[in-house]
Image (cartoon, rainbow, N blue to C red; front, top):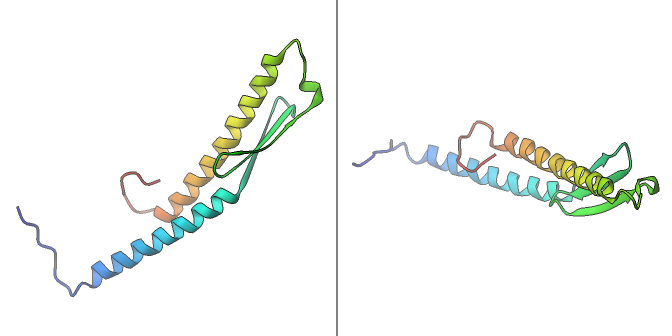
Amino acid sequence: MKVRLPNNGGGNMNQMLAKAQKMQADMQSLQADLEQREYTAVSGGGMVEITVDGKHLVKSVKINPEAVDTDDIEMLEDFITIAFNEAVGKAMEESEQEMGAITSGLNLPGMF
């Protein structure tokens, strides 16, 4: 089965291509910006603070000395895990929201 596209001088196709190229450039620029941002989360009522970047790499870990109890290392491990997951979640959420703003109105598989 052959599909015929309207022949209107290629104006619409050129416009669509230009729009797609602009969107791609905007997404690349935003991705670079997002990777430079930092996201911080705190757990245990301030006992642990973790900062990650937009690539989800840990930039810093701060542990309140009061959180260090040699009889309860598991609690400290839990605080670290919670803070890390929350910081990464913030980074992912912001990325999805901002990328979604660029691609809004499009229904492309695999896109935000």
